[in-house]
Every structure is written in structure tokens, then in C-alpha cells.
Figure 1 (spheres, helix red, strand yellow):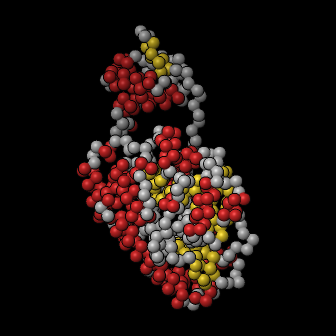
Figure 2 (cartoon, rainbow, N blue to C red):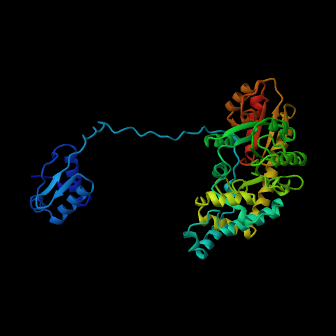
Figure 3 (cartoon, rainbow, N blue to C red):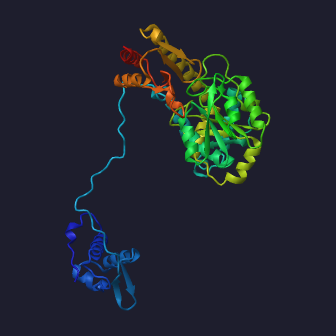
Length: 464
């Protein structure tokens, strides 16, 4: 008769302990395949437990397929595959996280400090949404995003970018990377996509991982080279005309018109206008978008709130030409919106009540002061005759060209040794340059006033 020690079960229910003991005996071969188990009453009497406890243990074994019942005959053990031997020692826990190196100063990524996010306002709006939108936040969002957010985006684009866009042409998604993938499905994997060279490498990687052909179009002083584009077989080109990353070039109106003319020369040619940080232009009026001067429906506009609010705000949006919006409804509307309704309603209120505009104005002033302080410190330091600052008037980064006989690789090594992290212009080219410039990309949005002295110290030591 089967015998088990119930004193070792701890807080485990009796039926579960009995089930586990019997399962292990079956797996270990102590109870053989085809062997008949004791009846529920006899086992209960032997173990001094209730019949219902044994019944529950047998039921669990049957559900999981360890035993089977035969009417008027009882319970029998099923034949199982041979049990895989367990390792004698528990495996060591392996951490998959890569520990990032700590730097004295890091100018590689844009970020928003916690001191500058309007937490109290955002918390208040979240409470209001929870109170007033109880039903809506639990319902499935429309595939394009909730109407209130799309209306708020439409109004924002009109006031900030001079764009007249119907909410019905806006699609909300969880980050620009997701929307790039949706565009590939909409426009077709058989198309040939063009990206800027140098340019933001993540865009190229996303296109290539989605199995589309990618061409790298060089830039000239006006932005994307029209000559290089016309020599290629590109059908869809992805550009950032308001403020190219990383060169900082602002595309003039003549080049924009030339690109629109290129797009109109053939069917299914489109321009993806990536307007990622257009709100942070510090001199003059905002540059009009290509979408606002497009009369032939060839421009697809894309933007994100991760620059204006916070990198963790994974809410972005597309503005599609009407004929592409019809295609999207017909072919891709089965996709669910990837942004939670709660976040959409909160952001919509944040925009409609004017808090986003206030936040942008406040952050624009803050970033301008950070930029001015950093550039001023560089120009007044002993580095002044060793550096040249370029493209500092728009966006959240500028270029610093180091006038040194030191090779780029040696300069990178020296900067790294001083505990400073920088991105370098050569890293954004598709292929290595024969004579890469000793030019670094300074992303200054994440630094504080205290960081500036560390930056100067690191650079001075590296260039000594």
C-alpha cells in the first residue's frame, strides 16, 4: 500500500501533497505503468485522510494524464516516456543583463530630467480620466487611436506646424519604431526604401529587419542629395528635413520642392517626413513641414511625443494622405491600437488644456539655456582654439569639430579614458569613411549645469 509522510507537507494542502507524491512516484518508476492504484476508500483508510482528499488527488492525476480510470475496475497508471534525468546540481543563475559602464559625463542620448516633468499636472489629469472615463478606458480603442487624442494632435499640428490635418487621417501608435513597421506593411515590402547617409542608424536597421531593400543616399549642403537619389532605384525616401540627425542640416525650400517633384514623377513614390524634434528650434520661426506644401499627396508625416514630453512617452503618430488612409482602413484596420486608452485620454487632456504648449515653451527655454551655457563654457575655455561648433541653432544637439593632428580613433580612446561618452559623426555613415572627420555629436538635453565643468575637464585632458 502507498505510504506518504504528511508531516513534511508544510502549508501545502493535503490533496495537493498526495497528488505530488504520487506523480513523482509515477515519474520515477516506483509505481509502474499499467499498475492498478488502491481504491479511494482503502487508500484514505490507510493514510487516515478523507475519501474526498484522495478523490481530488486522483482527479488531478487524471486531468494531467498520469492515470486513467476504468469503470468498475478502478484507476491505472498510464505508460509515459522515460523521465529525463534531473541535473545533480541546481543550475547557476545566469544574468542576461549587461552592466553598463558608468561615465563622468554622457552626451550620447537625449533625456528629460525628472525635475522638469510636470508630475503634479499629469497626476491630476490621470485622476480625472479615471473618474470621468471609467467605461472608455476599459473598452477597446479604435484602431487609429481615440478620437479625442487625434483631435488634440490635429489642433497641435495646426498651431505649431501650420498643418491642416483632419483627425481621420491620423494614426496613433506606440513609438515611431512600431509605425515604421506599419508603413512597410502599408507601402509594401517589395518597394525600395532610401535613408539618409549619414543618418539615424535605427531607421536603417528597422527597414532591414523587415526584409526590405534599403539604399543609403548621401547628403550635400542642402540635405538629401537629389543627384544621388535620382541615380538610385529608390521609391520611398525617409528624411528629416526640419533638422537632420546628426548633421543638423535644415533643408531649404528649393530642395524640398525638388524632392516633391521627384516623388510626383512616378506612381507609388512617397516621402516619409520624420519631424522628430521640430518643436525645439531656437532661432527664427519654425520651418514649415513638407507635408504642408504637398499638393499631390506624396508626403507621409511622422512625429513623436518622446522628444517633447519624455523618452518613456511611447506615443507617436502618422499623418497619411487620404488615398493611403483609405488603403490603411481596407488592409490594416484589423490591427488594434498599441497605446493604452488610459494614456491616450490623459495625453489628450494634457494637450487640450494647454499644458503641452506650456511644457514645450518651458523646455525650449531650458534647453536653450543649457546649450548657451555649454557653448559659452567651451568658447571661453582653453579649448576655444581647438574646436569648431557647428549647427547649434536647431534641435537638441550640435556638432563639435576638433582641430587636432590626433587620429579619430586615438581621440575616441582618449575621450573614453577620461570617463566621457560621446557619439561621433563617422558612426552614422553606412560604410566607414577613408578619412573620417574628428567631429563629435553633443546631445546636451540630458546634462545639468554641474556637468559642464566635468565636460571641460574631460575634453581638456583628452586634447592635452
